[in-house]
Length: 318
Ligand code: 8YV
Image 1 (cartoon, rainbow, N blue to C red):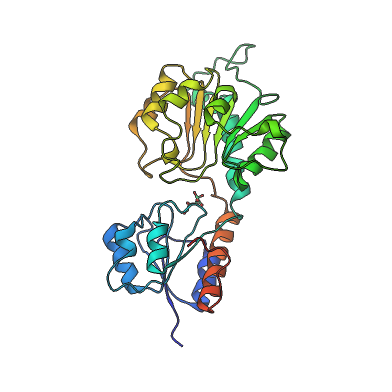
Image 2 (tube, protein in one colour):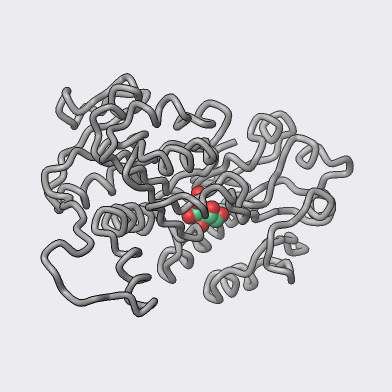
């Protein structure tokens, strides 16, 4: 039997690529950067399986490429808002993702952004490097403790829960907004209204999926409800936040700080964010550990192995 042809749109850690190469006719896109619509359409015609990343856009037009050969899109990542899932379902293209393996790594980054913003780590680091540190003094760069603060989680899936677990270790109190009540949480932690949660959270941390339903859920009106001392953290998807509105709110002192790991148009960052005060900007590092990126690759391989064996892939989303 000829080996299925697989395309990775990026370089993966060696161990994960090596596992795929054992079983498949493997191609790794040489440029290691997002593929455009034409390149993705060509890939849809030339391969049996396509393994994209979050910044490879797969709209209906690409999925419905005439002469399509691809039968499975095995996404390298848990979020799949860059893939038109309805179009895939209609076209009979299977889509899988990599849940579970990047939960802890992403929650670590959410907590790191809380610490960096609340303890003013970046300001301090920049001041020191600029040679502007005048030495220790009782009122120098005072931040705020996490202890006792209310963490408002927007979305309450795996990553939100892992973030809550870490935040509790820092003495934070937990509240959440989600479509569903979590039976294992105290009833008062649940907020059916995002606006009500935003009005009382000291830190609002986003953990909802991307997509049309959640686009700009954090807009100027929502930001206006947040207390002036509040901090916004986003490790989910940039599309959740109206970025110019966030920049304006920070500039006006409407909220105290923001920590972002994701952006609406990655790898572009809205210029207004660079000009905003009290903002920490990370380049989508949520899942960026050696352990996690290997585990993500292995999870994609598990899904491909099952699919090409004629079985149900474990992480099928379409
Ligand atoms: C991934 C992510 O590394 O898995 C996700 O949804 O956001 C990231 O942490 C990235 O999307 C790669 O596709």
